[in-house]
Length: 102
Length: 190
Image (cartoon, rainbow over all chains, first blue to last red; front, top):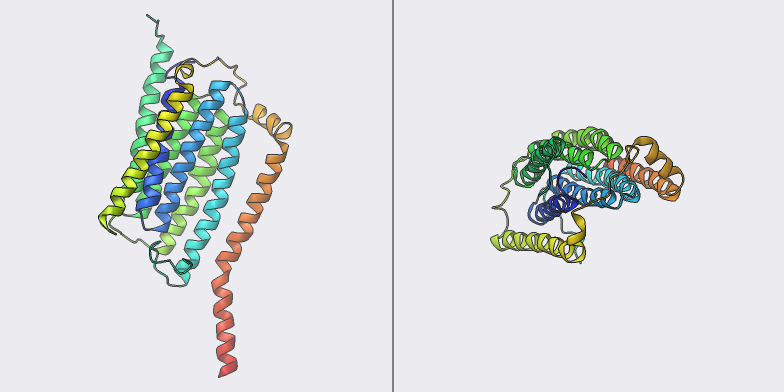
């Protein structure tokens, strides 16, 4: 395999996952929380594809494509929620949307 | 020690550029005030990830990443961001500072955990990977895998997408129906 070994790709994947987790924890805007979730999913995808290349096995790439489809579904529902919030004139702030908290 | 070929040097250069773009745009997504700029930075992140996928000889996944993510999903994101209007927020100042500190600690803990676990479990064996043929990662190969070994996941994915589409439609039309019901109730009361 030319270039860097799989461990370097896994380092990037770990950093992306941590960045996304930080964004999910610290941001208030649900749109940016969704974007940070996408970063976390992509970190997982990069690790899956790196291990797929390392093991010379296609299951990792199939899994990555499945993660992509699930991410598209999640974005669909999440953006639907954001639009519904906007229509009801609710604040786009995940800290103020605490009505369901027990 | 080891002979570094010209191709290896080029792959290293591309890897460094794509990896740096990936990390920088990921940090930009979580630190921009304006969600519109965050979405644009995520497009850069997805494009540089596609380059990394190409280096890992996953051609079909790279193409799907650019088409599905950077194309379709991000266009939807940008439309919704434009729909709800530009809303600036201070990225770090909102909320008590211990929350930001705890988020930094939690994200750092996740990063250290992943690196340590990978280092312990697979440390020495990750440097050399077997060479794969040119068919590895090609669309025909992926399609064959999807329709033979992974047929069930393929079909379940279609159901998941269908359910998500129905959920999106219901979420999008809910408010309109409830305002119509409210208007009806008001009409009956009046």
